Length: 157
Image 1 (tube, one colour):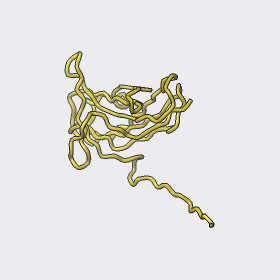
Image 2 (cartoon, rainbow, N blue to C red):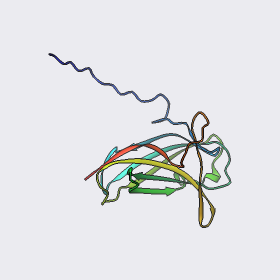
Image 3 (cartoon, rainbow, N blue to C red):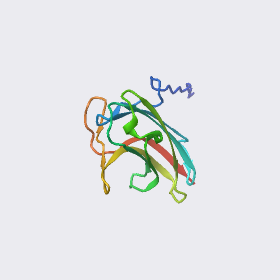
Image 4 (cartoon, one colour):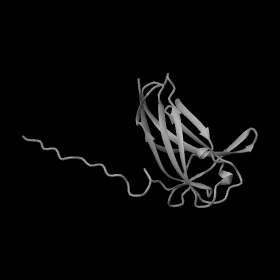
């Protein structure tokens, strides 16, 4: 028996952004693409995440974006919360695209394994209370939960 292997080609999704998406955070902003490097990272090292946002409407609230690296059992290996690209969302204009570079330092004690890369958007309702924006998919369906899983990364020792 002879086995022949053909070359495998992985083509990027069509579009002008890496990993194009169509998820809205209510009617405020949309996550239209993302990228992460590296996909395999050692505990204690840094993941470089880029999020591509589009402003859907003028916002009176300055929202924060939370990015997390979380295992299925909810063990968190990294988190970074900040205004997208350091630019308050109240200053965005409709149609504007924002390129949001983030660094997520993996906890040096994080056990090896697969971790989800999560993103959510929230604003402060009171000094003690946050409200996360609802996620809406490309067909207009409100999704359960308030965090979007972008993909997975692997943590190694």
